[in-house]
Length: 411
Image (cartoon, rainbow, N blue to C red; front, side, top):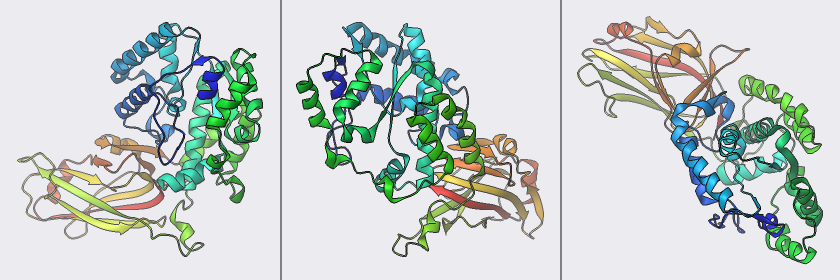
């Protein structure tokens, strides 16, 4: 953003300062970031939520966002009115939120111009593994969804692609291309521009090591090449392939590397918990639950959670399948009585589970396997099972809820 400022673009002053992850600063407006975060929270998402799993198509039209849109519109209008030339801002979240921003800009009478900033997906994955512990595959999917959502929404207002790595190779040339794409003055003194570049573009900050590892997905490599070449329409048309990847991925993502890397940390352990309540209480309490702790594994396994006997007027069951965010395959779910007899069995359709109450969970149907891919948004995913009369069979004598699960990724 300092480079844009040196070229004549006005930027906000409330920029987020640097920290141990970005020593020179983030160059992101604190106010815009706060508004973006609040909007994502409204939708039960965050910056590392896979939008095709959690937001869905048309999410920007949800009436719950009306108040947040008005706040964003007020900010945009104020900034544009105060600006004497071109106003620019940056936040990676906008790549996910561009459908909403398009509505805001249109309501404000603003004609936006977009610059897509990209970095080699392998470097992004390496960086997120170091900083957040994200699996490589999950990070590649994040890169694809951020990049393609932005390219699709921006359309012909996408003026240029700025590559992270090019700033370290020839910053002045990169700045010239950026200036030309945005129609900014080209007579900026080279000395002032070079000073801005030297302040921000430090070779020591280039922590990427993309040459040391391969892409996790073939579609990532091909789409990355298309975006770099400016073939946006072809890249966007590949978006369907990315979404199919989300539905079909079944390879171990995180902890299968243990065999290849004996020094790798042990697989994390998760807690699966089952809560119950009666018509008398009608609330879920920690004391009224059973739990099991187990290791995260891509191997399909059966998890059993007991339901005690002597529960008078059992009314609801709530399953908390994990206490970590991530992706998992749910294959089956059954309610058994005290003698092991089948009382209820899930039909493996997402609509059946959606008939209950879901929190912090998105479900995606798979074409090649039974069940669903479940995206757990945070460390408190849960759903109330769509059961009523079936509970009468276990209310007095107790029983067991069992489900079959395999983890695809932990984030």
